[in-house]
Length: 76
Image 1 (cartoon, rainbow, N blue to C red):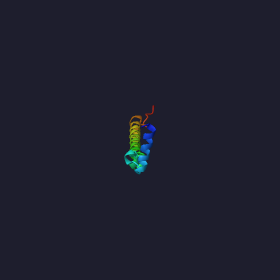
Image 2: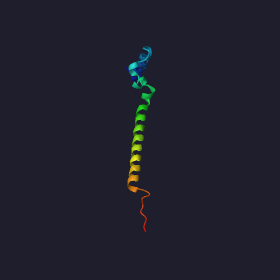
Image 3: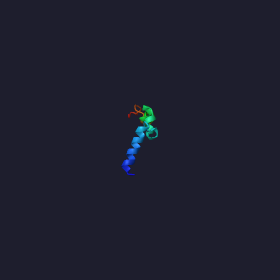
Image 4: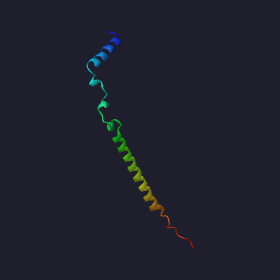
Protein backbone atom coordinates (compact mmCIF):
# COMPACT_ATOMS: atom_id res chain seq x y z
CA UNK A 1 0.00 0.00 0.00
CA UNK A 2 1.40 3.39 -0.99
CA UNK A 3 1.78 6.11 1.64
CA UNK A 4 -0.65 8.39 -0.20
CA UNK A 5 -3.31 5.66 -0.26
CA UNK A 6 -2.80 5.03 3.46
CA UNK A 7 -3.17 8.76 4.20
CA UNK A 8 -6.36 8.95 2.14
CA UNK A 9 -7.75 5.90 3.97
CA UNK A 10 -7.15 7.43 7.39
CA UNK A 11 -8.56 10.81 6.41
CA UNK A 12 -11.70 9.09 5.12
CA UNK A 13 -11.84 6.94 8.26
CA UNK A 14 -11.80 10.01 10.50
CA UNK A 15 -14.45 11.72 8.38
CA UNK A 16 -16.62 8.60 8.37
CA UNK A 17 -16.54 8.28 12.17
CA UNK A 18 -17.22 11.99 12.89
CA UNK A 19 -13.71 12.93 14.00
CA UNK A 20 -11.19 11.33 16.26
CA UNK A 21 -11.11 12.66 19.81
CA UNK A 22 -7.84 10.91 20.57
CA UNK A 23 -6.13 12.88 17.77
CA UNK A 24 -7.10 16.30 19.12
CA UNK A 25 -4.46 18.26 21.03
CA UNK A 26 -4.81 18.47 24.82
CA UNK A 27 -5.08 22.26 24.60
CA UNK A 28 -8.52 21.80 23.07
CA UNK A 29 -9.94 20.99 26.52
CA UNK A 30 -8.27 23.88 28.39
CA UNK A 31 -9.99 27.08 29.47
CA UNK A 32 -8.92 30.45 28.05
CA UNK A 33 -7.02 31.35 31.24
CA UNK A 34 -5.19 28.01 31.31
CA UNK A 35 -4.41 28.11 27.60
CA UNK A 36 -2.71 31.52 27.83
CA UNK A 37 -1.11 30.76 31.24
CA UNK A 38 -2.52 33.94 32.76
CA UNK A 39 -2.29 32.50 36.27
CA UNK A 40 1.43 31.87 35.84
CA UNK A 41 2.01 35.32 34.35
CA UNK A 42 0.10 36.91 37.25
CA UNK A 43 2.14 34.99 39.81
CA UNK A 44 5.43 35.99 38.18
CA UNK A 45 4.37 39.64 38.01
CA UNK A 46 3.42 39.53 41.70
CA UNK A 47 6.84 38.05 42.54
CA UNK A 48 8.64 40.76 40.55
CA UNK A 49 6.53 43.49 42.15
CA UNK A 50 7.19 42.10 45.65
CA UNK A 51 10.93 41.83 45.03
CA UNK A 52 11.03 45.38 43.66
CA UNK A 53 9.13 46.68 46.69
CA UNK A 54 11.43 44.89 49.17
CA UNK A 55 14.61 46.04 47.40
CA UNK A 56 13.34 49.63 47.24
CA UNK A 57 12.47 49.63 50.95
CA UNK A 58 15.88 48.15 51.86
CA UNK A 59 17.68 50.78 49.79
CA UNK A 60 15.67 53.60 51.40
CA UNK A 61 16.35 52.21 54.87
CA UNK A 62 20.08 51.95 54.17
CA UNK A 63 20.14 55.47 52.76
CA UNK A 64 18.38 56.90 55.80
CA UNK A 65 20.57 54.98 58.23
CA UNK A 66 23.99 55.57 56.69
CA UNK A 67 23.70 58.82 54.77
CA UNK A 68 21.79 60.71 57.47
CA UNK A 69 21.11 63.87 55.51
CA UNK A 70 20.86 67.04 57.61
CA UNK A 71 23.16 65.94 60.44
CA UNK A 72 26.30 67.59 59.14
CA UNK A 73 28.39 69.33 61.80
CA UNK A 74 29.30 72.93 61.25
CA UNK A 75 32.89 73.98 61.58
CA UNK A 76 33.59 76.98 63.72
